[in-house]
Image 1 (cartoon, rainbow, N blue to C red):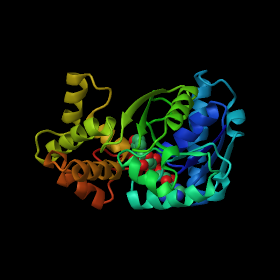
Image 2 (image 1 turned 30 degrees about the vertical axis):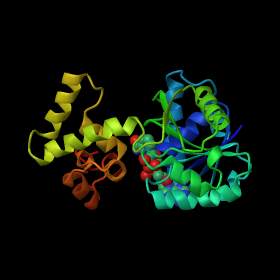
Image 3 (image 1 turned 90 degrees about the vertical axis):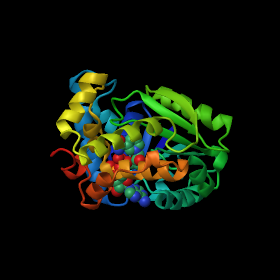
Image 4 (image 1 turned 90 degrees about the horizontal axis):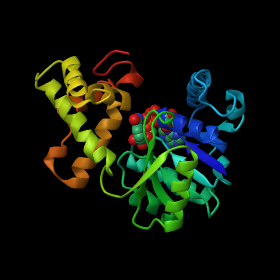
Length: 278
Ligand code: NAI
């Protein structure tokens, strides 16, 4: 199996790492060499940690030897499955899938790790809607069990089956849903994070208190503001916009504070500052 990943960021790097850990040959593409170098360094660190804990079947250098890092999209030509994990922007993703539809071999399957963008729209752009699907991993990919498998309007049974089995081979638990805004995971999670941000804006409580109340009171492993910082506030805003537009209900309106923080460049953990300082 040859496995392609587009985007060497938080999610793409994690997906590529787990695919290589599972024994697949992996091609990782990003737009600049420096992004690939950064992604590779994160993977090396994660593999070293897992190795120390005795959680890898193969040595880190064996796993790394299965991975190829490139800026050239043509490297995906002979991939059986390509998973996209680039910026959460419909126009940018659609453009990419238009190109990939021409590059990847005709029986290759294309998948998006999008948090909220309609799978059916990206499937149409790819020109192979029956061999297109949503494969939504959770962050951090090496540790989280779930893959939400999202069927677009025209996704074939064979494609759904292939991706389900691939997720299982990667040691994950795939669960199926259909293509509606935010799917299941973010339709339920994101309004809660947005509400926590609204609580900060209205001065209901300090961020530490909001997170502490949800952790201790609801037994959540992480408070909503810590989680928003971890996901990336730009990604949270993009998902809320999709929910708001796609479902047309003002209960999904992004908090003005979330919008303002993104405008100010406070994106959470990845920019060093969000609700907390990193
Ligand atoms: P990120 O900002 O960490 O990484 C995105 C990467 O894509 C960057 O390295 C960037 O250089 C690269 N990129 C951008 N445009 C590109 C293009 N045209 N071609 C190739 N590479 C390109 O973002 P992150 O967090 O990894 O998110 C990626 C996707 O995964 C988004 O669709 C997001 O909604 C989704 N996602 C994010 C989760 C999270 O917790 N952050 C969880 C699950 C899904």
